[in-house]
Structures are given as structure tokens and as C-alpha cells.
Image (cartoon, rainbow, N blue to C red):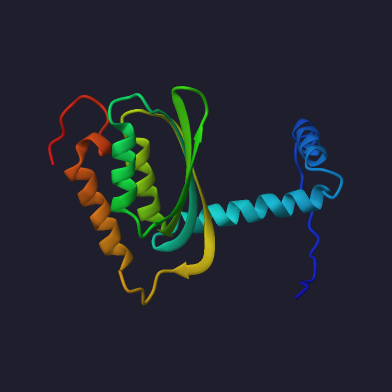
Length: 175
């Protein structure tokens, strides 16, 4: 289903345009300014969708951790089993004798996916990580067997029942 293309003008400082043209060149021969602008607009709109409460998203959480740090492997496994309905798959890679990388694919309500990611990222031994989310195009959760609000509440309860995951720093919290 083709859509009519609409033309519009964009004004920007010359130094910004030079940097943008370098980006266009890095994207390859099949890209031009218009294509790259469309890509950037799509990215911004998807990012906005993913920040909407209740939006169903897919996420990739990439983490790096030292598998010798305490019981990090057991903690990560426990968290992933706790949220097995949202964790679609994971891949584990050995980077060196001590360091591992794991890519975890998640699916669910945007707030819950963010909460699960924060629990994992806050686990002692996880040295680095990043969550990337994209919209599934299914919109806000409606008529689901398990309401998203219940799932978010469960994740928050989990975080408070397991303070080593939710609060990796060494001071107490009053709840």
C-alpha cells in the first residue's frame, strides 16, 4: 500500500547539515537525506510509543557480567524464571574466562519490561547493560488474560521482596 510522499523544507545550521550528510553517507548507497530523515522520524515515533503506559513492546536487554561475582548466575536465572511469561528467549555468550554477555528478549507492557530490566541491571555482578524497546504495533493492552497493572504490581512486589536486585547500593530504604 503506497502512500503519497509529502515534501517539506528543513532549515538547520551548516555544521549540523555537514554532520548529517556524513551520517547519510555511512548509511550506504541506498540511503539519501529523505530516507535517513524518515528513519529518524520512525525511530522517534516508536520511542514515544514505547514510553506510553500500557503499550505492548518487545525489548532486548543486553547485559555484561562477571560470572565469578557472588551468585550472580543464580540470581539472574531466578529473576528470569520469575518473569518467564515476559522473557521470550535469551542467549549467553562467553566473552573471556571471567566475563559473559547475555541478550534477553522480552515482551509485554512497557512499564513491566522496564521494571524487569531495572531489576536485572541492578543485580550485583552485572557491570553494564542496555534495554532497547520497540513497539509491537498492537497498541495498549486491552482484554488480556492477565492485566498489565497486575503484572507491574507483581514486578514491584518482587523488587521489594528481593532488595539485592532492586537496590544494589549499600544503604537501607524505608518502605
